[in-house]
Figure (cartoon, rainbow, N blue to C red):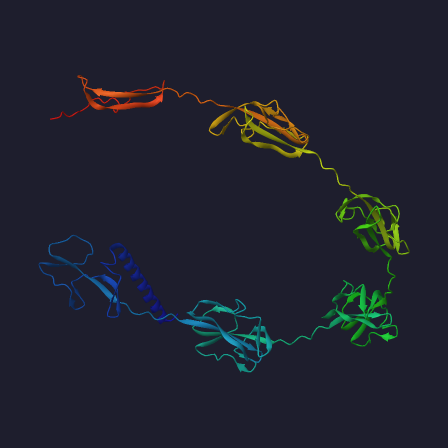
Length: 574
């Protein structure tokens, strides 16, 4: 180690020691009284010592006399006058800057040509700082693309020269390193990554598989299907995975073709469906592996002959009266269904209605006709295409099967007898005192009635012409007093009962009322209180305690100060 460096180290150690002393002193006494450093006029001064004299250098800092005393102690007791303590500070010399360095990575091809901008791995760091230029793809990319070429990492250069080019010029400030890791040196350290151009790989052989669809003459009936396109050789293929690749039927030009087989040769009928050469191969297998070029598979289809149409039939229901006359449009129960299909013409009211109305008449279902003729009419003419059935259920036959429903005219029924009940209200002379009340109106005979269910039917009293009548009794006869209240005949009947059953016609019930005589008025009385002095002279107006109340009503004239005042004042006339 040089003498210059040893001295520099000792100075640095001494400065640290002084700083530690200053910090300790500051902690004990406080930075305000004894600051560790003082800045003045652009200079920094650090605490050195407590002066042993009042003179520092050639200057009398303190003039000692009777009132001014000097002390070289930082602690003590106060003396009369002023005691002066002097802190001496030394100017702090600026430290020499610590040496620094950087690390740069270069990226070149095998000719030494730059293929990517240099990367600053470390910039202006203290010497001795560790570096690593291979920490990730940013510092040491696996590949670099430039000018349409791709370069792959090859190595860290062992020299500053690559190919015939000086990638780095080494001097006092520029150093070369063949290591990706190390410590920073003063100046710039250069690391060079060399990349090799990547040569394009020869393309892997590929192949395709095509399916052809032909009839037995070798004629194309559907466009070829590309099952596999440009896949690496050895890739598996299957041309029969679904209806898209191997359809069961194909339609073309009004004909239908059904799958027959996979052709065993490239020729079908007299046609070469596939011309086999170096790039076109033929296969009679639906599954295999792709070969270079195009492999062709041929599906052969046979024309499908049209089938004879299956026989069909229909079932029709006819609706006629007993004379064979149509009373409702026929109903198509089954239409153009295969023979043997089941039918049922009586499944609901739509097929076999219970009644039919026509021209103001109502017809009710009677029976299923046993013959095609009803009355004197041929409802169905039976021939090769028209058949008759007397069954509502069966199986469809070729042509049309006819079922006939016969309906009988419904005769109108005699109306059920009905009746009403009326209540009359009369006085003892048989005179009407209130309008009759219709208790029951046009109800079937035998219906129950009750004319005394409430005050509306049997009021307790009736007022008429200023008189009041009270209920007396139910009349036992149709005559009250000398009046015939009800004239009994075939349609009008009399009853002395308030309850019963309705009879045909009108049943009359008579309520008799008796005139109510007015009662004599009940006796009433009043109570008056008088107020007099001992001479009997009135000293206050009388008080009406009770006025016109029924006799026997209680009274009390002493209920309060209003009725029985404790004192009364009355003025004497002057």
